[in-house]
Length: 320
Length: 232
Image (cartoon, rainbow over all chains, first blue to last red; front, side):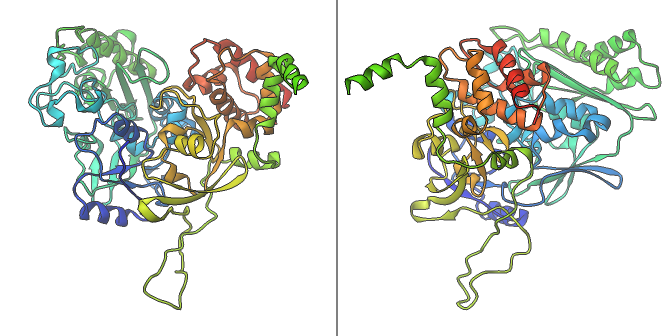
């Protein structure tokens, strides 16, 4: 790694002030598991001049129910979510998603905020030393379109980019209708992601997520991740379904597009009906109606559509 | 001299590993220290920030309202001074902001049991306990560990001889390169859960890769260590 400046603020305001005063090439670090890898491989569009670590700011961790909400601090370690009895019993899909994220070691240092704001794993974007000048790095070509697309988007391109969002916590957060609380405003979770580089989020440069608010949930929820290996792997497709006490469902797929993909068609299909295997399969088919494979010149990602169908079926049946 | 060499030659692999496990520790501290380090997931909130006040001469320390972790102190050339404990022994070190914890432990302080392998957080060879959490030292900035308690497999070998014995008895290593990482992860598991099930062990060790494929024996060894330690 090249050298840079490391800044340890003790309050969120201090961190935001520093980011505002140094708008160029300053990056936020939570647990560091994404940014350290990115810096070792030299894949950031511009190399950081300074890193602002949120490590020493008190009050950004913890999982607690407060009033009508479950509050999760943005710097809470992912493993704490996986271990939490409260999440396991009431917010099952979030605990399951956390327990399937990366490897146990990475979960111990990776944070919730960092997991949701991580950069894409597209292998052209991640190629060492910025070898591919892709759209996300300011170029004009998406190399995946004429290359290997086996893990790429099945729900179209975003600004000519075929990459997908790799987060495991994202679909669970969307299914539970979370809200990201930043130092400036509250963002409904579905509006958190965009094409922006780095981080893939709509956050301003000096905007820092402090916590996530999830409305108290009393229904059933389920998460499923299809991946090549069980641990230390990113999803081929993952998804979560949450059906609340009054029977309203929220279903979300991830790793299928640049942003987590809410499956309203599947939600409509199961609305007000008792869940059966055939209904779940029907919902799965409805969810991928608009899906379209990118052929590429190597392996096509057509198989992902079938997997997405299966994931939807599994998560709906998991809420039975 | 010749005798000594001969002695060395006949030293069995088993004995060598036993010794390595027991002798490598750098300092003697009670098991209680490791227990307390591993038992809680809380951040230690003992030290406080002392903001250096350049304005006033008569006031040396500012009133600190919130308890926070100690911050690194910037020294010359942008290096950061941090103090922390490794295997119960206190260390002060200056690090560059770009240095990882792995670099600090392996290169600067000479803890060679913290292995270099993938350097990308994929293999678990560089695992250490950081305030009781098994983390990858290659994916942790050295400057962030100020005030924290670090345990490497050297220290763990000394504090948990039952685990080392179980690893030797089950021949858990072939080339042995991944073993320190496994020891750290297994120790973290045993400190949290005195009597883990096979599934729990598999899940806990899932982040450690072994090229020789010794996975099945690790599960046996951790079971044995757990019963030898009496589920404490």
